[in-house]
Image (tube, rainbow, N blue to C red; front, side):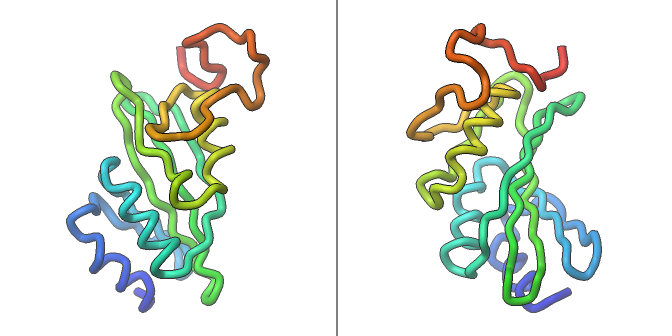
Length: 141
């Protein structure tokens, strides 16, 4: 495992559920949802990772968000995976750590219905303002 991945895993061992190495430059780390701000801040502010984007999905038993980060010095990608309950799909917003999270969080909120706690402007981005409340185009029925 690379030096930077070793550094990450040592710092977040209590926040980690699972580490998966896809290949020599791609790692997935499943973390506890309540740890997202701590771990994202470590990657972005302390270790110099760049936030790429996030992906939201409606899975059978949970909602999932994968946050993708690039370590441009080595070309490694770290993707943080969080699983959220279907009953109360919410997680802390990362917009206070990096403003680049604002638009993708709005899109995930709008299309899947995951609430981002502390987001400064959760309003429609892609859908019309008169779109029905609690109707999410990418959520399984």
